[in-house]
Length: 240
Image (cartoon, rainbow, N blue to C red):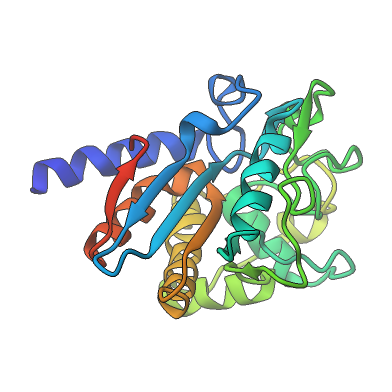
């Protein structure tokens, strides 16, 4: 069991290097999501359809997600979706603390041409950026199983300790290239995965009497699978 856990953690670490931040081009080649969809079933015959998303996709990729979401919502599925809530007017310590850990400023869209801190892959015109709207999310009906940026930082610091900013952090404008990251002291994995997945799992448990659609990043698939397995769900369609 311990050996299997180490293998999974190694895969997760590799995924993280190319996941929420920079993305391997090899996981942005598809124009649809069909082969990635995973269906889970519990003993009460409640279904969870997990659609592992990526932040950039070829033309048509997000339409393929929206098609599935619209269809399942019509069947009364509850939709849980990811998306760190960002206040783009906030110029205090919170966005700088996020940048300190992950290495870029989250300005509200991955296609922000003015945000020089984002990886160049996000600037390429042949890719669409993920949004709630192009995945078919209805913010008036669906549940954002994620934190606001200030709540995310609060929970990280409560669990792992304060993120300390320095002169470099304050002197580097949020939209400029960033070179002050400290990835030895602060964990991108803990911030982007551990904390946010805890929020997702809570949302799943709160809605487990319903059929559920989960729209969450592909890098979270191992954590989601392990959680659902421990909660008595079985993977009946799709592969991990």
